[in-house]
Image (cartoon, rainbow, N blue to C red; front, side):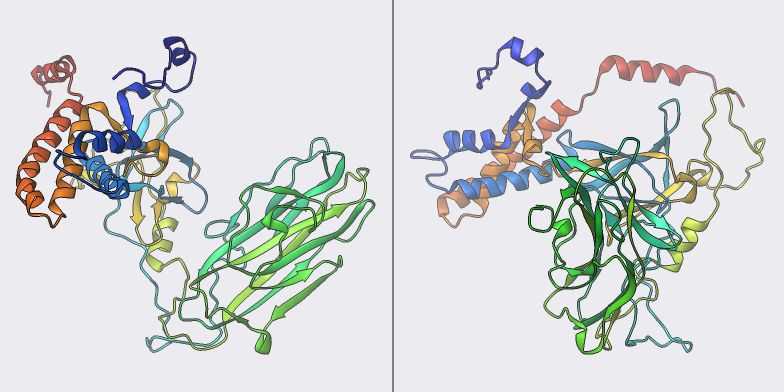
Length: 481
């Protein structure tokens, strides 16, 4: 097909959407299917576009696994938590590796002999316990630094030269450091939030308690505002300017919508909702324990920092739960032991042509474990990748198979596979129809679908004869013993 959107060659080469001509959008595939297959004197006399769209998306998901070029990649620096979130469109990984200073990938091996199971709480006799007052937060005292499952928006620069707002752990307390911000002629600060999602299935009432400190008014800075409570929604990932609740648009300055305590008077104290004031969460399956922090300014003179902080956070169930409880929410002994292990250091040195740290004395090792790159395993329940301790701080690349329907922009079909899409959609519609004519046509289109998918696989296989020949030349080399 030509450039149906009237894109000229100049617009293409001076634009940013290179290589898109080889693909057809899923919307166009659906439209073209309607033109070719639906109507009077065609195999499908009448069908809703929504039905075609359903079968088209199912075809995308199925063909993405082994037919389309659906591999994607993500790169992160592994944090202290040694965890990485699985992408939203993740189906399976092709390889996971860390990158050295030369840009070379070092493959990580899957640690199939470990996992992160649900750790059941037991008493001294080994009986399962369903006790009142069990904590439901992970890392509530911030001993493991501020890390997953806690989330927060990123601290941002403010108007005072050389300063940066901070969110972090100071003396064991979660601390928000605010500086002045000049915004549109107004003086204000940025609003921040930190939160953790908790499962409250089978829990009716929660008690909450925390020790908070709101910044005292100083110069042109007013008293700090600090909220702690339970909310149905998390905070904003983007820090937003806030001068007062009345003119701020960020949810980071809205009070938690289920229940909360607040510190707004520039003092420190421990506040709680317990006993008769316990929070009713029986209507929810998941809630967010959330902390919100900001403050106001009157003019832009002050350059001092204002600090809000919170510590000794406690969230407990008020009554004996119906479901199994865990002694270590979000963690297990297996995961704790795995991440605390000290495997061999991974190497990043190309000054020597050989890497032989033990002089060949590695008899009896399983070849899959005879390397020092590090390891990982995937916890499908939590949707996270767990890494060994020698990967902390490393840049890790996840190459994975996508289902190709993660976003609207990804829902496109290579032109070599268009016919396979049409045959897949046609067979899916005919095989689910109750019309006798369609049932008679279904076996024929099943065969045509199989043939079209096989042809698409061959066309998209990307086998280059010269590259294959070059690889096979290596088979003639003599192997020295």
